[in-house]
Image 1: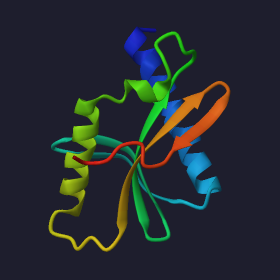
Image 2: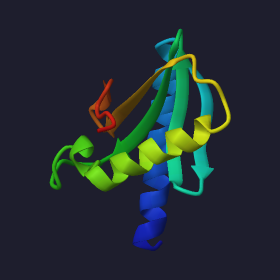
Image 3: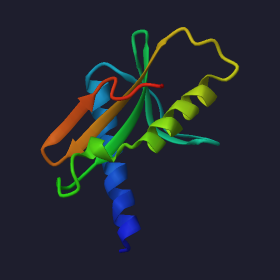
Length: 118
């Protein structure tokens, strides 16, 4: 199997674990793999008055650093643009947050407010 295929399977598995984790924490999954002209958001989840745009990073080891270290400024900007697109033409009456969920063989680490618009 090609490297990209393995990475895709790993990513899908991580997103599935992250969604299960979020549901266990009382979140409702609004969307998975939300696509728009600016890119893709792995998970959009809500809990109470908060709507979280969640980037899921899955790693089998830490040889390239922690999973969250792979979320660079370009990816953050993509998430901000996707959120703007998501709310276009809608009234936003929620707290909007940008989270990262790290999925490793050790478990799931949810980093709330991992990054914010500048």
